[in-house]
Image (cartoon, rainbow, N blue to C red; front, side, top):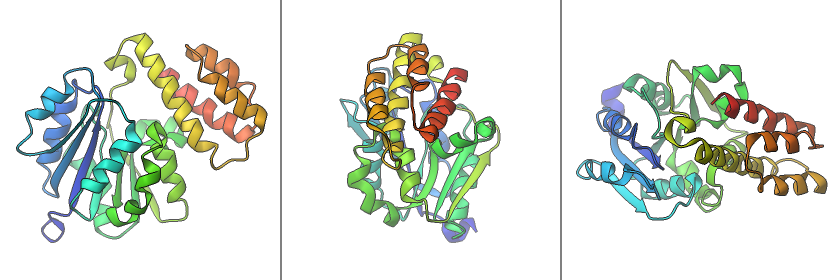
Length: 260
């Protein structure tokens, strides 16, 4: 199968302050036999990520944004740049990514078994909803090109956006055994990590409410959440949400963050 499907996959790697794991992730991708293009996009990193990426300049397509644009914008940029019919989204904060994990995500698509593949760390079985928020995904480029303009504005809510767009398509969710990514608290200070979690929480909320009928009171509460400075404060506001589905989704995400 490998010989018949070689040179068909472009890997797209969004990078934001991932100096601890970046070298291992990029090395794993460029040595995979089914990936002949790796596009790494630095999204305004303030650590050593960009200098590290430049060490791969002869083997990786590099794009550097001086300011942070958000994951949705970065992935959209990568899709436009990709030269292959299959694109594989890969997070840069994975500790132990190997070829086996990559195979699990891209092979079903190459074999036409689905229209989209979501590969998630099997530890998230504790919170099944978060299999839907995984960053390790494979799609046909042709299916994503019409979505590029909308994707650019989704920031961290891009996974929710893609789930919505592929809701009625054939999607496979595959557990990736032992795959682990760094938690924000392992990469940043506690204060910075908390701010990043809150920002991600609100961006996911923004995408969720596009598919739900939300009362004005709940929209107002979500706006107030943008001013919070701690996860404890966030939880207090969440309890006041009237939309049951939104409250359950965000409550699950909150507990997921708390564990991280």
